[in-house]
Length: 140
Image 1: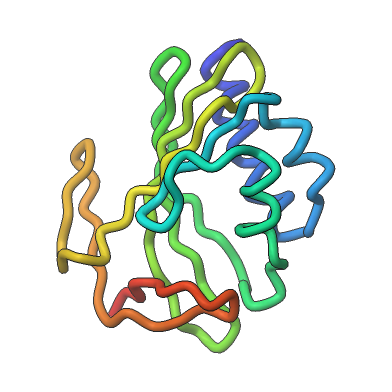
Image 2: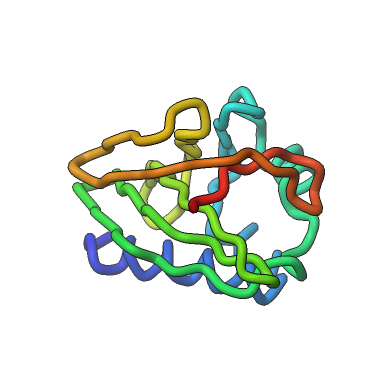
């Protein structure tokens, strides 16, 4: 798969999340998909959808700020703007196996005020709860 196609797959996954298009996201993930975050330790595809796919009705938009693809790996930094105007930034690391996403790691900078990842500055501030009950570091 070409790097441009991987970047497009990432864009389509974010768009599908906002559209609640679970079918597309399921098809973009490999059967042995794993998700890692400060709250999730390499959970499988089924557990990801049970835990993390609770709807996007609280999100106004995702602003994809940077997608960097290097072979089978990619970083995406995005700003998530909630309805009502609050926002947070996050960076996710994708690993592809062919045309499928094999692993996604959500890199949270919530424990630090400023983090740098591949030259990208990530700032976080107050931690608040999202409608899903998880804490998020919202940008000031």
